[in-house]
Image (cartoon, rainbow, N blue to C red; front, side):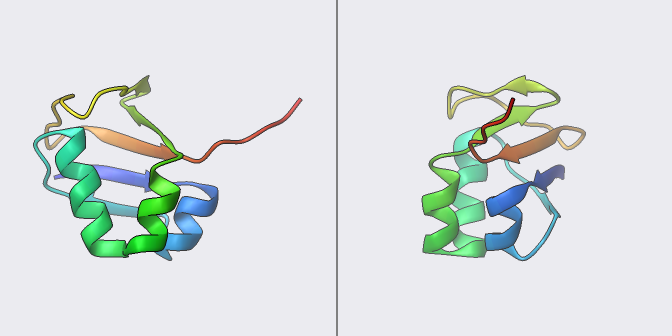
Length: 79
């Protein structure tokens, strides 16, 4: 199972900092997270960047393995 780490609004909406999900692709992961955490989370997830082992996943076909770590990062600003 891949380790999913939630940050900021994603963590608040999921009421968790992390989860373990068995997903074959980023698209599958998105579907499973939406099923687990609901419509509000889906809305937030749609604005988030997903990093797989530190590399941004820009396509739902990106494969996942059980040893992957996926960071769910909402947009942020800083300076």
